[in-house]
Length: 344
Image (cartoon, rainbow, N blue to C red; front, side):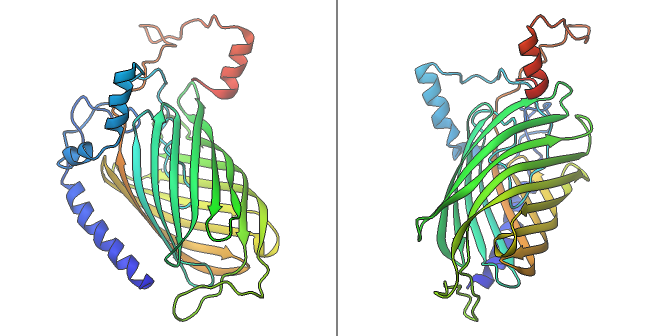
């Protein structure tokens, strides 16, 4: 049964891609999901995505109680950074209020790693603040529930970097074990409009190690003779992206959960991202995976369905009409913080 999942997923990709690819894009005067320049015309799927967008309820509530629900944010624009496949961001750093995303991740490996399926829902409830809930299935069984919180901290004055942090506790439903990750994230590109971008995570991860034994039936039960234990692991994840065109980009993801022996986990693989329209993008890739002391090949398929925010970033308040920077009257402490944290 598990082996049929890739075929089903590819069929879904083919169907949705066909629909989304017919959509020219977005309405003139609308902004991209990162608050970019207006471009393109309305897509055929736009009315459907607007109809099922849960952000409409929050916006209605914000209007009723007098919270900020306008189309212009006080936040500055951030550079567009590529998105990883396996260890990814809750929402793109710098995402604005009301943006949301529903995703499906499929991962299959050739040796002892369990077949992984993850249903992900991501929501930006305030400018630069986002939450996510993941349901992780191992060999068809729901094993881990993971809530996320993400905060963008600032953006470089030249719009060439952006940074933030992300916290995601893992709740193991069968054993009651609590693990998870806490990471600092830095996105960088040589210049704002560069086709190349990178994303680095630095932090720590705690995971439950042991207990996976493949069988011909595809079930992976826990062996009583195994040592099952929790382990803290320093985490260094490096992602590189290169945009080939408006629809295609190449990426390379290296996820390093550093620990000796069985607790170490290492993923290195290239992938391709295809974005047929503003409401969806699809990722496929595969490469090396070291899981519980076993080297193997692993395959990833990631389906992402997006309702981008309709809010726009504020205009650059640091420049005058002539384009020259205005004088900075802030104190030395504020200027120091701006250098460290970036524009906010």
